[in-house]
Length: 116
Image (spheres, helix red, strand yellow):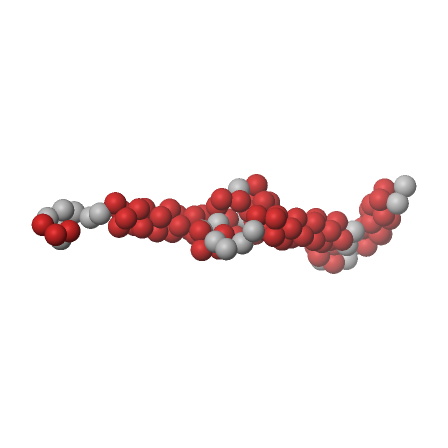
């Protein structure tokens, strides 16, 4: 620093810290975007497993218990939706006109498995 606090060259630590946090947040946002595009089914598990991967503006001012409740709700509702989706015949079963009977047998076997 120069005379009377004037800066003569380079950046201060506060500016460096601000730029570094911005870089880290951009990288986190990029990773969150890539996971949400490439692996949308696993996005909730990603956030649940790595809670620090959200950029800091999304985490500021929230209580960790509140974040935990929201995450648990999202995970449980996702698992329930996956379970409901497992009991429905796949959309590809409609494409085979001769596979209706085998699809019905498989679904009956699946339903009897769940309700033992």
